[in-house]
Image (cartoon, rainbow, N blue to C red; front, top):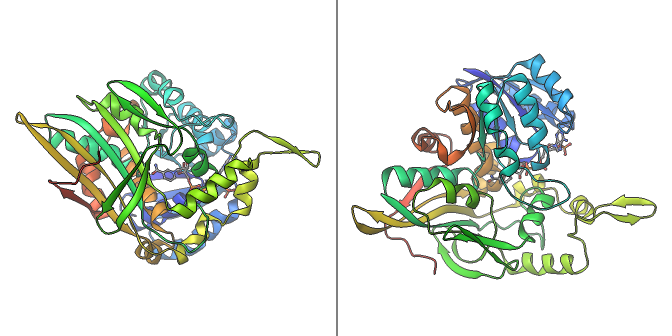
Length: 400
Ligand code: NDP
């Protein structure tokens, strides 16, 4: 039993909060603290009558370390679960350090002015967290998150050595709009308009955005086009999984999404460089976010399934072995259960599980760690229990 402070009250946080409330044996109390307190209060009003978990709410600007410290000191959580935006990772980590409180997030730090996805800023806290006797669990969403847990599980139980990992993220959902993003549009567009990259023989290989395309037939979804993207977990998995020769990440996109994105890019709407507009500085991408459908509004209209997982190739007992671990999640079932579509669901459930395992001491290494550095078994059990059951394939179709 313990108390968790959840920072942010958007798409992912809403699912994690629903899940904490379903799991009141572990979460005796949660505080929902975000920029817009109204959203926190609305969720409390909906969920408090359904749960034994005691819900409190607060307004906080997570860019301000002192405000965060004061709030953490007043609530005294066992763990802080950061579900705000990647820009707030370091201020929240600073506040956790100052108050000696463990920290969990789902996305690595990004500076506002450059779309860079690297762990170096957060890894720099390792020694200080170790000395403070607290844990930082980095990347406890689906990807990063479950993909790292799957990799640790494959390494522990199925292989002597893993040489190749392909992470395949398929969203077969249809929301009926010509263009919308399934999670925060700013973060999503920054990710997909960046150059692609993968790791081969210990080195990054860079590609043009969307340069490498493959077609894959996903169980539960069917055939989809998928594109190689840079993704943050490649950096940590290449270090933490033994024997890796190559690791790649693919995500599916429909043609309508890509055509719209290209057009928005061509006219400058995806830029993160501020421009002058009627005497005011505005960031085109932030303006675009304001005119696009709110990802939260997609829930009721999205049908179909996601299929996210990892294909591993390596050696077991001297023989070549292939192994695919994946989860299929249904958008409408997620919506019925927690009022959000599957993209938020597949991130919010692992966020709750990561916070639970740190809070109850099952994962208690002191310092700053990526998720694949912990014992995967309790997390794998919890995925089955809390709504993201996994499936195995010992003879998967490989990606060339
Ligand atoms: P949303 O935009 O829906 O929610 C973000 C929340 O953070 C909002 O409630 C927002 O407040 C709040 N917030 C933003 N800035 C501040 C601030 N300075 N102080 C306090 N609160 C703030 O995003 P998502 O829920 O889609 O994403 C949340 C996180 O999850 C992101 O970091 C994203 O990268 C990550 N993610 C990870 C995935 C994975 O698989 N690992 C997949 C998908 C997302 P307000 O309500 O006022 O706007």
